[in-house]
Each structure stands twice: as structure tokens, then as C-alpha cells.
Length: 53
Image (cartoon, rainbow, N blue to C red; front, side, top):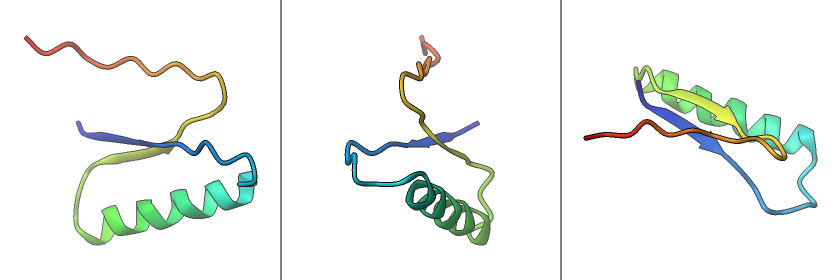
């Protein structure tokens, strides 16, 4: 599964702004027929990436 995690370093972006960007990205992914998962990172969240080998 492909997974896109959105993040922002701009402290001026409110939660509502991030939610709107997330919804927009999810809409684009759905319109293109992709099964990609799109989420927004949260402060102090750790994202583990699978090791390929």
C-alpha cells in the first residue's frame, strides 16, 4: 500500500487549514482511482517506514 503523509512546518497553519489540505489531497487521490492512503502528520508523531530488502 502506498501512503502519503502530509506535514507542514508553518506554525501559522491552523488545524482547519491542514484538514482542508488533507481533504483536497484525498479528493484528488480518489478522483484518480488510486488506493493510496493519505493522512496528516501530527506533532511528535513517529512514522515507521518498512525496510525493503
